[in-house]
Amino acid sequence: MVSTVNDRREEEGIVLTPEQQRARRQRSIAIAVLLGVLAVLFYLVTLVKGPGVLNRPL
Image (cartoon, rainbow, N blue to C red; front, side):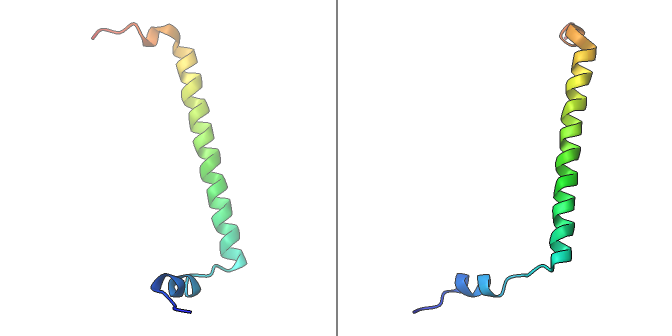
C-alpha cells in the first residue's frame, strides 16, 4: 500500500496529554458560556431600551 503525505501527517500529529485535553475543554466551555452571557446581555439591553431604539434621527 502506498503511503501518502497526509497519512504520515496524521500519524505524526500532535498528541495532547489528558491534562492538556482537560484544559482545552475547560477553555472551550468558558468561551461558550461567555458568548451565551454576552448574547443574553445584548438581548436584555435591547428589551430595556424598548422601541426607543428605532426612534432616532437619521
